[in-house]
Amino acid sequence: LVALGNTHTGVFTRDAKVMRKIQDAAETAGELVWPMPLTDFHVEDMKGTHADLCNISGGRNAGSSTAAAFLEEMVGDRNIPFAHFDIAGTAWSVHGRFPYCPKKGASGIIIRTFVELAENF
Image (cartoon, rainbow, N blue to C red):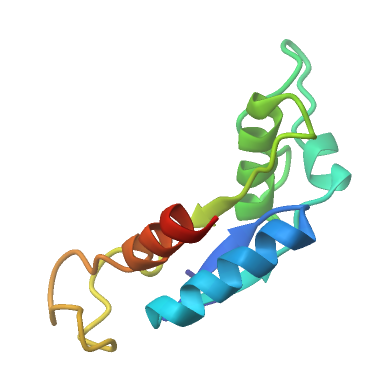
């Protein structure tokens, strides 16, 4: 929310091909996505003292990237395409910025992109 406001949905993936498909689907759907960083540094930030991984980094920086890295670790196999959509800023109260969104309440943003992905992936 701090980085992208309530217009762009952050997308975390290491797969350039998947990111391109997501960007194409979002463009077709009339929604805005933005690629966000996801690296091994973010995984390292979650290494735990009492467990293999903590679900939060040791510091307060790059929280959304470390959250995406945590989810990516749950997939396990890096050959499985993975993407995480951070909808914190766009899911609620976008003040009618897009023609299909209400002025108050849940926006429905990114659902159109998901439908495009499902139909054309």
